[in-house]
Amino acid sequence: MTAAIATHNLTKTYRGVTALIDLTLDIPAGSIFGFLGPNGAGKTTALKILAGLTRPTSGTAAINGIPVGVQGAHRAQIGYLAQDPRFYGWMSGRQTLQYVLTFVPSRTGGRTIDDLLELVGLADAAERPTSQYSGGMRQRLGIAQALAGNPAVLLLDEPAAALDPLGRHDVLELLKQLRGDTTIFYSTHILDDVQRVSDQVAIMDKGRLVVSAPTAELMRRAAHGRVRVALVGATDATAGDLSGLPGVVGVIPVDRNGDEWRYDIRVADDRTEAVQGAVMRFATDHGLIVAANHQEAPDLESVFLRIVNEERAA
Image 1: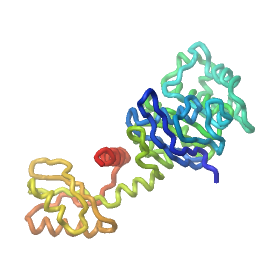
Image 2 (image 1 turned 45 degrees about the vertical axis):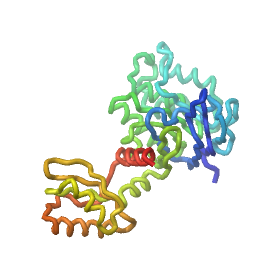
Image 3 (image 1 turned 90 degrees about the vertical axis):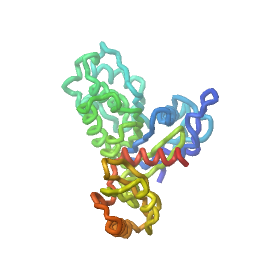
């Protein structure tokens, strides 16, 4: 099956600075794909290449099997929302979409303006000038204009970054409504949003792809092989002692509160329960109180920070 978005060794250099390095991705049709990374990671550069707004220095990209190019036919397949979209404030939401549609080739089965306004929750504000729209309303209007022409792929650059919690909720609910009908590729640094809506995720750092995986798999992989331990009565030497237990790959002291130390213990494959048992025996032998000894259940933010930090330390 042809991937909705496929890139191979995609690279972009600006005046001697490499913003994107050998990006290779295959994104299945109908999925919501979260594209993560800190500022300067290469997210916007990749989106601009996919949108045909800039040329790659090397490598290839395709949308539904159609090669990406500045003047390419792939543009009929996509809708694009830049970060912080701007509109003519004197135009109403309806007039804005009417204007956009004069530039967008409509594909078979395209939504009407009324359909678009209803979909993004702006039907009641359709006749109001966009200068009166809130930030969340402007983002939803931006998604509506990106959906004009019924694109197969939606490219969104930080669609909820500047919004308050209510506006973010509105945008995320809209993305979930579109799941399955449209492939959504969106960049963000708001990790909680990705965990809530994305089927797959890629993490970028300094222009390079660090990891790409289904979101649920990434979370399972991060939780597996990690034990969070808290010991009362531990000393500076305890971390080294724990490192010598069977099945322990590494021990990272997380923090200290009085005489209680917390540790993040990396465990060899399928040794989690054995390591937990070894920790209990170690504590008994050394007169320590076990305050915590459980498999870690991290959120996406902690997974992201760990992956990026490990990549930079390598």
